[in-house]
Length: 131
Image (cartoon, rainbow, N blue to C red):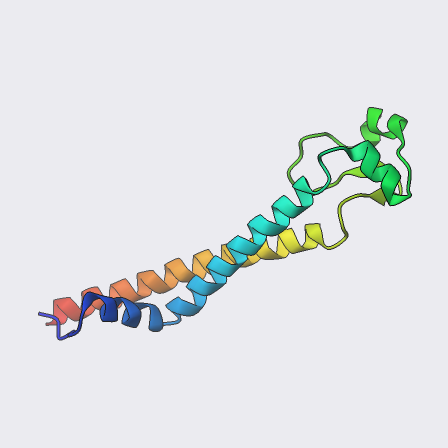
């Protein structure tokens, strides 16, 4: 038998407070929310009427550039790019690096969280077998 006492809620808190599980779950949660917010910020902010947004921004709109293959294939998810001309893009400079950083942080957080949970479960099994 296990010598753990307390309510299920206190055992859950103890589980997330041990072995760095809380840290990795917070990193995973924050990076996933930030990734979704930044990704949709980059995609939805410029998709409505690109031509008028390019003109309002003061950089003009080059329709020939959009008809050519130089502007890249449409429908790509990453990197996010909505170019007005070959030298100006409607997507802010920080969006693509932020998506990449939060994506990597999410993958690291998920890996470390699963590894930490696996280690904690392995320790629990060894403790129960020894008892």
